[in-house]
Amino acid sequence: MVPSWAFPEAKEGMQDRHTVLVVDDEPAIRQMFEDILTGEGSDVVSATDGRAALDLLNEGAQPCVILLDLMMPRMNGWQFAAHLQADAALRDLPYAIVAANPRFRDEAERLGASRWLGKPVDIGDLLETVDDLCAAGHPSRGSAA
Image (cartoon, rainbow, N blue to C red; front, side, top):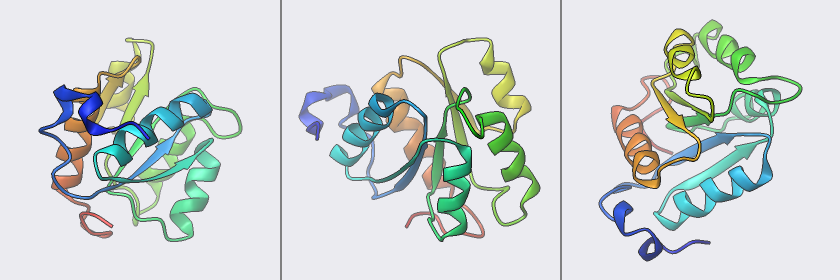
């Protein structure tokens, strides 16, 4: 776990406990997000692809935000986003696209994402995104788990 003092620019963020779903096929990315977010007081659930993320959501996981990679095997971020949009119980769940290629910034808006974060992710931007999107709440699932 990475302590919060290791990221002084992040000390203002993460005021309330949040549950975040991280969907990325790279173990190092999932672990980095988990270390940062748990170090700031969040609970983190992770999935290796969109299919695994949908399974977690269908099994009752209630994140206030999803951090979503696009390029994944089995079910990629585009397919996962389409499933979210098609499911009335999930369509209002905020998510941020996390991608290295800046051309996906426009793609994020087209997919209905609330935000876009470029890789490598700026820790301050990550914490601000989670705080903002969790504070907005999710009408059918509650604002935080």
